[in-house]
Image 1: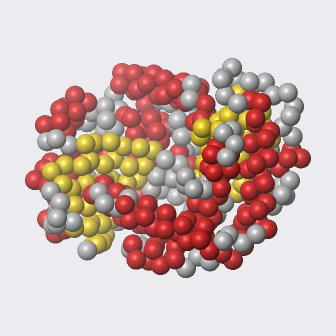
Image 2: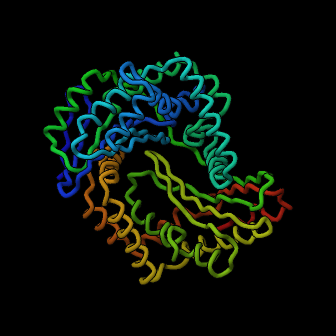
Image 3: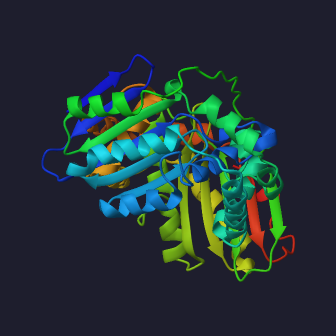
Length: 418
């Protein structure tokens, strides 16, 4: 059973009891991410995440690591474009210590100057690492050119110049404005008692700041373009994409089915026609990213430089087919069964249940139970898929980024006509 509580400070708590397990997962979720940064401080949300692990008034970075190990826990964090999370998985008996530890991390970071300079260097190495992973880099370049001059188009990591320029004062200011009760959601799933956990949270998070921040967010304006970047690589890496739907769009389930048919599974059209039948790529797939007011559907492929033009032609041909022809019943059912299976299997751990509680709260302001998800997937018809394909795939909607050895001009914008 899922229970939701709101404290007088505005802090939200959601729990789901799983009595048949011996573990519990606890997460503190921040309803802010890299999208909410000031442009002059790109990467500050991610840097703040790093710094929260560097120590508090009560614990050093080494103390944090040793305490987690001493209870056999798993502690981690991430920063995304619209949220962030700090989460831990422990044996149920150690849940009180987990609450105390997470509260200390997110409420009392020290932000010591020497730690800040060291962690900046760590983040700079992380930025270099992305530069050395072409399948990651091509997505970064695509997003930056597809949504130019918009926070959703910028890297979560920031740039070397922006990260280097972040001062201790700026970091503290960002933390003070952002890590406030109205932006925080705490979720827990596993072997737990809600009332007991509520008491622990109420005491541990009593110092949380209440002052809400204010934001004026504008949706990005897509600028689909063909971009070719010369790189000394063995393969060419390409990312092709078009605008998708926001996360709460009424056609989101039809889009999930469309993506699964198109390139989201091993039996998908892209995987079968590009890799299995023609052997043109080892990796080829499509994926969806959805935000509060925007979305994007992308295709990734890594192939021989001489095959780039042909791979693009095959991808665009599949898009045209999805617009023109209804998906056969057997293929539609297979895609829906694949989606439902992944959804159910993905909710079999305490960490995934904890995460799902948070994502439903942050994205929809309510809990969407499994039966509602499954019914919505079952309700998607072939006409819905074709209608969504016609809406998303239109002339002028496609952008392409190619990263690899210098192109001989064989890739042209005329290939992107739908």
